[in-house]
Structure formats: structure tokens, C-alpha cells
Image 1 (cartoon, rainbow, N blue to C red):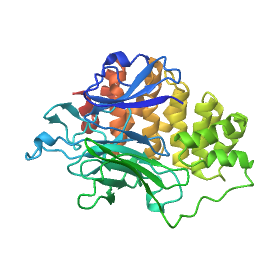
Image 2 (image 1 turned 180 degrees about the horizontal axis):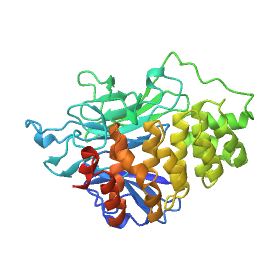
Image 3 (image 1 turned 180 degrees about the vertical axis):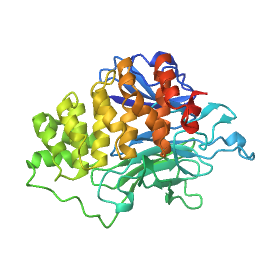
Image 4 (image 1 turned 60 degrees about the vertical axis):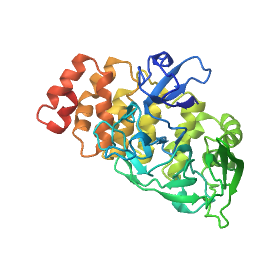
Length: 403
């Protein structure tokens, strides 16, 4: 239910925008993603270090993604870095320090890079959460390159705690056609609208139609009212046209109905994820009793969304017992989300209770898990950091974060 905004490296973003104590980042460097309260009375900085990322998007699991510019001044040098699609982790820095100084994705303190596309000027990006296009695109990213006149696709296939590297050209202009895409949105019918233009190029809006529809999810009539199912199955739930439909319906349904939907193992996983999200946005959060039950859900994605919900329900002091349990979950995807739920914590007890679990995560075989755990070190006081360092003295890979 909060507002999210992205700003580039020359936008004048300073620490004055981190007005809420729970802000993951206090002093931003270069471009950043901001999170603003619904009434605009305060804000947080979620991630920074972008050069010129115009846009960002969420996927169905709640992860952030952005497409950032290359460092064109270095085009003929070995240190040149191309345009990059980032999996943006909370508290992460995307590597842009100053002109001529941009850290490569191979550095251990960089967020995951899911795709690179050479020269270009990134503009709009969206996550396709509809059923009209083929399955290849379901849940994946569609992002735009203004300079080269391309729409680029990045399918999202889960790999450990993150996503596999992939990407290909979905559509591009021919000859001197003047296809300079600026933004992309999914229409209510599942087709695409793409705006083009700017800097003297031809302005227009294209509609890209898929002539053969994929099979939509089956409508369940045995797991609650049709009204509930329409809310849980709403396509593109973050879009304005979708929210206009599902949000009034959600407010007319009792919160217990969504709790039962989240707990119902016979429901489709995407429906259970949406039930958890709606409990957080519309009904003030996920209660401890429901969250505890959901830590035993059969789906790792449901347990991961539970970890997120615990962090957003009480961001300054999340339920540490639930998070501790999820940080040591068998699924690294769940572990990462549980660690991310501590990025807004201001309570010292949050790190006292979860310290041993964070130490174990720092020694994980999964890079995004290690990275998410390492980001939390900056939120700890000296006592917590020293205790963590002592626990990892015999693990060189984990202890390097303290040097």
C-alpha cells in the first residue's frame, strides 16, 4: 500500500529523504528506489547505486527489478560495463559511484545481474502477470531500450534464492522506422501498450497483440465465493486498472476469509501469495498465529511471502522467533526473504534473537543468501557485529565481510 519511486543519479537525492527511522538506507549514493507512506508523511530509501535506471517493477513474489544504463564513456575500454538488469535486493547498492567508476557484477557486494544487453538506454520495465501471452512470458520481465529500439524479455526461473540469468530480444524496430520505446504496460486483456518518442523522434503508442491466448487459470468455485477468487486471481494486481477492480472487492470481504485462503494447501500458490499481500495492505498486517502456521506451508514461495509479510507488518520490530525459524528454512529462497525482513528493523533485540541464524546464512552456499545476510551487518551495533565475527572466525568466506 506504499508508494514506490525511482530516481536517477543526478536527481539530488540526499539523506533528507530517509525521514522514517526504519529506512534501510540512510545516506543514498547515486540513483535510488524510495518508498513513501500512503499519506506521503514520510519515506524510506530501499536501494541505491543506480546510474540512470528510468523504471523498476515487482514480480509476483515481491522482488524488485530494474534495468540500468551502461557506462558509455568507457565503451572502448576493458572496464566498460553494458546495460544490466538487476535483481534489486533491499539495502543493496547497484555499483554506480561516480562518472568512470562503476563496480562490475562479479564483485561480492553487488546485487545479482540477471541479464546484460550491451549498448543502449534503458527506459520502461514491467513484469507480465497475465495469461494472454505464452507461458514463456508469464511472471517474466519486459524491458525497453530506447537507443537501440528494442523490447527485451527476461524470463524469471527460480534458481536457489534468486533467479537464473537469461534474456533475449522480444521485438525491435527495422531500418529507420523510428521505434524508440519509452514505457510499457500490460492492458486489461493481457496485450501490451508501448509508448515511443522523445528527443525529436516520432511519438506514438503501439499495441502488441498475441493472437493465440494461453490457457487462463481455472476458476475455482469450491474454495470460497466467486468474489474472493476474482480478487485472488486478478491479473497485473499492481496496475491501476486492476486495483480499481480488486481493491473494493477485497475491502468487502472479512480478513478471516483471506487468512483461510492463505492457509489452504489446496489453493494455487499464486492465490495464497495474493491472500498474504492483501492481509498486509488492506487489513494491517499478518497476525502471529497465522504467520506461525504459514511457516509450515508446503510451498517455499508461501513461506517466503510469509517472511516478507512479517517484515512489513511490523517493520521496526518484526516477530524475531518467526524470522529466526525462516532464516534457517531448508529453502534458500525463504532464507533470503526472512533476512530481507530485517532490513527495516530498528530494535536491537531483532539481531540478538536472530544472530546465530544470520551467522549460518553468512556461511551459506547460496550467494544471494550470503549477500542478504551481509547487508544486515550495517544495521547492527558493535556488540552484535563482534559476536557475529567471533561466531564466524573459522569460516573465511563468511568472515571476509568484517574486514
